Image (tube, rainbow, N blue to C red; front, side, top):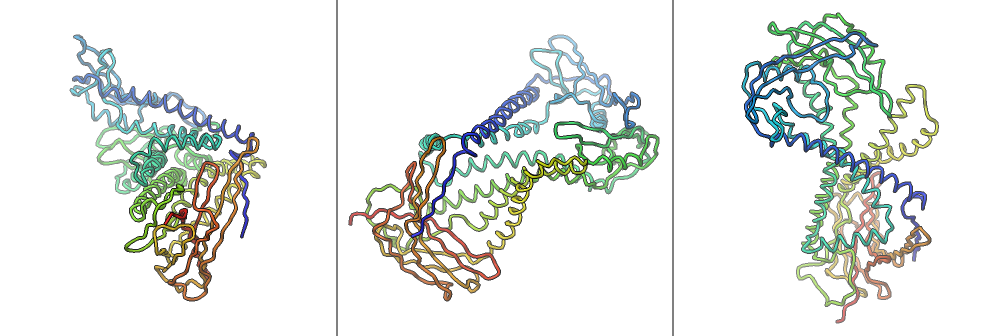
Length: 579
């Protein structure tokens, strides 16, 4: 008999860790709640324009303003005025009113030239168009309501709320967590079908996927599409009016972007654009951008590429740059969310299928009620692994993506420090083990993929209900090339888990009280039978708040120069019934 004792502490690092993690979770939760409330409020105010009174407006002025206010450091004009200037008249509250606003926004940034020229084409002077007037304030009006996609930005701060709540939930004493889980289970257990909770878990991962998609589409997918589409755009002579580097300072350091303004002419009309290429946002790497800007100083005449269908859209360069790689970071969120959703739904489907095949025999907690023997008229109990091979691959992908996504942020900060010759030695020492763990997780993915192609075992007992003292027959077979397995071992293990509190810490002791080797063979492993005598002096499966009796069947097949077959099947051993 083998004894294994494992001691685990609640929280992280005892009382000090509990305080630190609790504060960490509170910061995430509080910041997320405040940001979610503020963002949701602004979104609602903007979306409310759709429900204002709609009337007809007449456009009186419509123009694109381009003003240069003088040179600044780096050759960029300070106070550059670019945007769409419009005014319109409408009747409201029995009087003629005048408006000048186009649509509500979350910020007050001026319109970029592309949007300004587009609006000028949509709202020419003299056009009669619909507009939205505030029902209680006739002087407030907009030509357009806010975009229907705008509410999706609430998902970004909501992610911080979920992370904060997740961290705090693990800092509660286990007794309180168990009580909360019990209450939730009591409320949701009525008519609950197996696998029903998978929908809630899938919804949690959907938030990750939606946030990643919300960042990936505008920062990479759309610019990449435009870069490919621009290969067929015609060229026009362009005059560079301004060029320079714009810096953006924050707590994470300084990033840079190319700031350029050029004019060009299409069909006798002059347009202006601020777009050097299709890259959005800013990044580090000053020298590379400086070299690009130095090649197009103010006054340079060069070619630009413009959209023939919308000539106000133009760029100086349609090539891909290294900055595009930063736009791939949202893929980590999409991977975590997408894989998590698939794993949750697949797991829920498997639970429902398993429940249909074996009834309630898979419940982890077994009541000690005596019931008559239940024999399967058409066969026995078919065992399924606790986790499938591809579920392990998906799970490892989720963990690796999440871990390396978080660690990658700090690793990138370290790399920027290295480039600036300002390496923090303490940060380096702390970061090394986290990076190594991330690399090990990545290396484990191909191993799990290879293991997914192993022969798949199917095991079955000759009866559905297993009781203390029963003598059963276990049969097994493999789907796939079982000849690759050189040695097969099948073991039934019974373990006792006891949890207790010592001071502020909580410990769990685990002891293996039964270990029965059913098969230990190096020949004829493809299929076979074995006898399983359940010892009469052992304990049946049991689960209480502080104690558990857990039975499992483990199958291990050795494959030379390849990942081994290693499967664990949960078993439910019932108390002996009165016959």
